[in-house]
Length: 176
Figure (cartoon, rainbow, N blue to C red):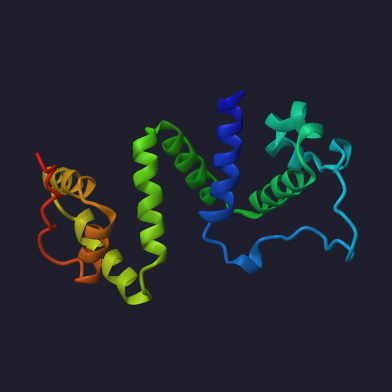
């Protein structure tokens, strides 16, 4: 059951943050009149297309909080609007995320936080560095990945701020 919850949580996270769609394109729930509380959504009132997407939650649907139900429905409605190629990319991302170790996930979250604190110019330099990376021979890419993995988030950020050029800084010493 935890695996199912993780998969659905990962999927809703991916749909909400990784689609690349502007916030204005994401569908919001209908406005709730001031002072009124949102109400539960009966499974029978959900469209067949939405039900197909959130089918793993069917058995637990009535136990979900109202806010969780509405969140999941917003994500399902958004999913329906995505082109098939984008849906496939998100599915691949979800599978990759589920296969990551907890340590790899921590690193990914730290990198995401760092990325969102970069200026647009720093993001452009990082993107250019990544484009250069993709043209390198596989052995050189493996070497750089290993170096990058051992850097602290602050060292990674400093490298990007310095123009994402040249060698990576040496990894931190273990102090032994």
